[in-house]
Image: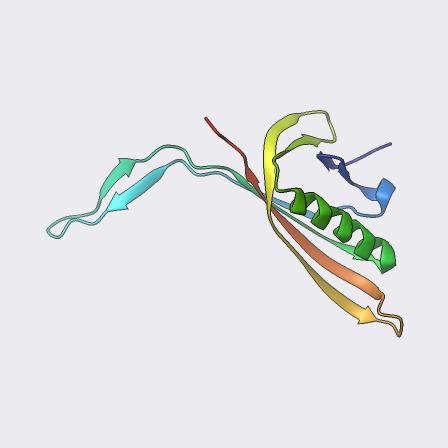
Length: 127
């Protein structure tokens, strides 16, 4: 079964009708500035920050709503989870910081025909 990424037990990919279309990977170099009254700010190194991933996509019908419920159940565990991409690269442990959905074209039983969703992950480190 092909997959884009696996977070804990959750699979992102077409095989589960829950593929993402955008992934933003952000990392910080750990630099900050201290303002100096009589000159330019002074740059100092505070240590590398944690990486973040913002993953978003568009899914359809009740399947999308079910998948988001699965992600919320993982989020409710409040534990870091391993993240592995589709080519087998282990990204380490990550935590779910935020999960949002925007339901559109909702029919009479409350099912959204289109769901835009975003999940924000942050690298987990206790080093």
